[in-house]
Structures are given as structure tokens and as C-alpha cells.
Image: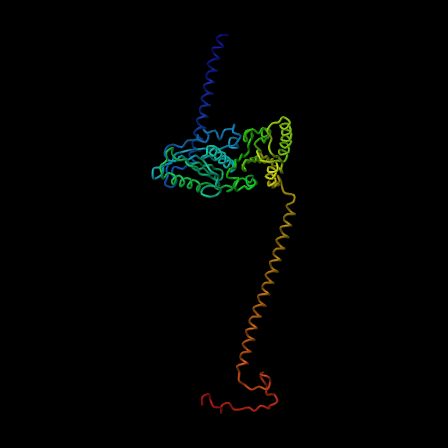
Length: 405
């Protein structure tokens, strides 16, 4: 019996070693693959800048915790590739470039807005600038630039103690990276444009694409804890003075209806318990709209009244109304063509009549002037007289004296 145990133990130990060795090889291959993908993101040289040091796949953004699943953001739930490297300018300025590429444009925009919020909390950043100096949207703060373009987020930071001319080279490096990226949809998410006065509100917006939870995004508001999306909803948060608006867009009516019922139940429960509740709440289409900390309920409802839900219908199969749509398009095109022909014919006729009338008037005026200047006797009222009755004598013009004779 003891001999059997002694024989099985080496076998188990050998299998364990083989398993650990296989795991180590797989981890090593994965690390090499991530390093290779990270190296593809950042070029060795760009413009007059060149890499200074190795490319690292673990970016500072990941170390800051902005890509962890615990933050409830979409970037943690989807695949992304990150890389960072230091670049040296021709003047000797050193800059850190961090790049994260996602599977969707909205994920890159979400990361941009959350980094902007963290900087605003530290009083280091102003608002976002849409489509101006670099990328689709971006912002600048005292020691760096951040922007997104397409599926890619980029952050360029200066050295801890940058020289006086570092700002110029930093902006130049950011512009070079922005020009080399795919533009994608080249716009911010549609949900942001549905915010009241969105062009001003987007400077302080925080966007969550495909979030899992909104717990804690607005302090002391437990109502948001019951909002569940399972990663199938987006949210936009913006400030209007002291008021804070949260719009949640669910991708299906069923999910919107389920959350609306849960919110209504929780809202009544919080009121009965005397706990904080939003100034106003309303479901608008597939949107769940909250307004917190508004001065009055009327002001909160005024903000919600400006929200318009635009419904989009997508057929999973063939569109059954495709023939009717084609017929309407044909009738509309044919009618437009006939109307254009009639208009063109009318304009041409008017132009011809106007030109004919003008030429006729000029000719008539010229003939009148010729008749008025002619010093000839006429018994026909100035008109030509035919000598049909042979009463007018015919003179021989050859015998007439010439002028001045």
C-alpha cells in the first residue's frame, strides 16, 4: 500500500509541474502578444519626435483605475489595447504619450469625459473643445492635452518640470498623433446632443457608454442604485448651474419599461422614508431622465421638457415596407422632375418673350428715327408710295447734278 502511494506521488508532481509550465508559457505568450500590439500603436518616430525608451503596455491610465470594472464604465467591459511611451523633441523636450484603442468610438469619448471630470475636481482643467485644435473632442490643461478621435483616446503630458517652450512642442506632438488616426464617426454620441443646450453642456458632460451601474455617480442619491442595464445602456451627466441632469438611454423598450417600474417603486419608498429624492424624474421614450438639486420642481421639469426622444426603427430582416418606400421615392422623384421641366420651360418662354420684345422695340425706335430725319415729300403720310397710277414722273437720275456741284 505504501509502495502504491510512493509511485503515485511522483506522477502527480510531474503532472503539476507540466501544468504550471504550460500556464507560464501561455502567460508569457500573452504578454508578448500584448507588447506587440502595444508597439503597433505608437510609432518609433513621428514628425521631428522620436521615442525615448521602450513602449509599455501598462499605461498610467490603467494605474489610475479608470479602466477597472469597479468604476462602472464601458471601457472595462470591452476589449481595449493600451500603450505608452516617451517622446523626445528636436529641442530636447520630453513628453509622455498614452494611447488606448477601444472597439467603439463612444468608449474612447467616455474615457475622455471621465478624465476631464477628475481634472476638474482638481481645478486643473477647463471644458472640452469640440472639433477644434485636435481630434474630435479634446481639452487642454496646464501640463498636458487629451483628446479622442474615432476609437482611440490619446493623452500627451509634459515632464514634471517642463521648460518654457515645452507647451509648443506638446501641442505639435498632439496634433501629429491626431492627424494619423482614423476619424471614425467624427462626432460625439447622439445622446450628448439631446441634452438641453448641449453645445454648452458638453463642456462639463460625463458620458458612460454601456455602463453596468450608476451607483455613486451623483452623491447621496440612492435612487440611481436601482438603475440596471447589464451593459446595454448609455448615460450622460451634465450640470446646469446647481442642477445636475442624468439621462439614461436604454437600447430596448423592455429594458426601459422594467427600469421605469423599478425607479417608480424605489422613488415612492424613498419618499416614505424621508430620504433624498431627485427634484424631478420622467421617462421620455427609452430615456430615463433625472434632475437633482434643482432650485424648484418647476425648474427641474423645465429642463426635462427640453428632452426629445428620437425613435429609430431597425428591421432584423427584410423591411416589409421597402416596396412602398421605393414607390414613394419614385413618385417624389418623378414629380420633382416634371416640376423642374415645367419651371425651366416657363422661364425659357419668358426669356424669349422678353428678348423678342426688347429687340422689336429697339428696331421700331430706329425706324421711327430714320423716318423723322428723312427730308422727303410724301403724299402718303410719310410712307412709301407705289407709282401704280403712273402719276409720278420718272426722272433720269443720271442727268442729276452730284452733291456740291
